[in-house]
Length: 511
Image 1: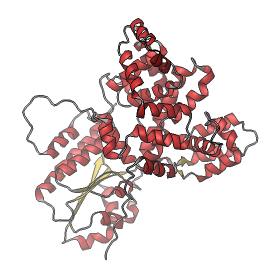
Image 2: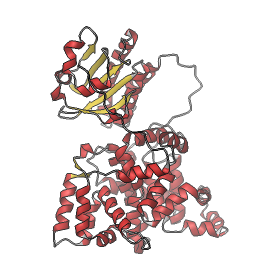
Image 3: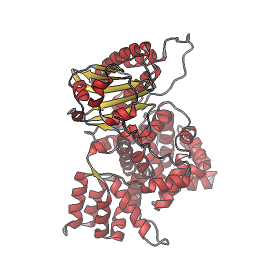
């Protein structure tokens, strides 16, 4: 009996025009609980416009959809709505409810983590903007609040539709320190600032957002000059003299629209580390803008981060405020360091990854780093196709976390163990199943069809890995369906043992 291959996703856009059209078509998901809360407020005669806006704000995706639609529907000569209240009043409550009903309503685990993470960064940026700037510019607090919250919104549909691209960008740019323009050209075919500018213009986002992306994409000269002056933060008088000598730069630096760029840059770079070169660069220019010492600015940003994390402490997402409890040189993402001048290690590549897995305390700050190392070890030991799946708490769902040599559609594969005797047995207790021509007829019918479609052939390895006696991970590997190499099979077994120890030390971190 033959099995159809899973359909592959269409090729990624490669130009600004096709990217904008693609991102414009993405429907952002919304939590079921938020959907019902907002719906009730829209149909209630006792709820004020301010209260409706506050409930919509709990879902950044919905806030973006409402503001975007209001600006699209308004006369092209009118100014874009600068706040959610203005947007709702332009649309009316009935049209706002219609928009609400067009969004996919899902549970939290169905929303890609990359989307939830980047929206948390947006919410953190909004908190930074409110705490650092809104009190000083009270008349502009609405513009500051909404523009800072929606600044990264052009990336939200990208994170929803292609979370793996966002995660690769994060690992390579923020974790490994690769040049952003190089990584973005490889992953997207265009630079992200240029893409965000094009999307912001298409959506008619608030003007401050468009101006900030225009600066990043086309007019970096002023920013570079300001960053250079900001470096000399211990001599404020000299800084002021330099600004007085350049009226164009001084005029640009003091523009209130810069507050949203600074707030988002602080939130985004602190996601990597509070004292990384990127974070310090934006801390210094923000201190220059506010005309306060760097130490005072740092104290203020830390306070706002703590205020922000109080709202999201119970989630599985990373918040930079967590790092305030860590040693100061700790990184959320592993940063590539220059290799020490020692003799070259001639160990097989998979063994080098195993050493990382065996480090105690754990070398990994989050699950993505851990599973990335596992993926790299499996690929290095010769497994040309591999899939790392995680079991949920109830062991009723297996969710793909990492893939090697498989179509991108496999990245979103979820398996229901209840439909497979093999998967149920592997989840009941840790074990390994090696498929070969001798037993394929016995077990093939007991495997999910989607899994067999991804791994066509008569040779495959499945292994479940436990932590504290409970299976939490499933590994599926093969060598393009060919007979498995015995050295590779032995390496796979040793890697699996290292994964068990890595899971144990990872679970203990922070205790």
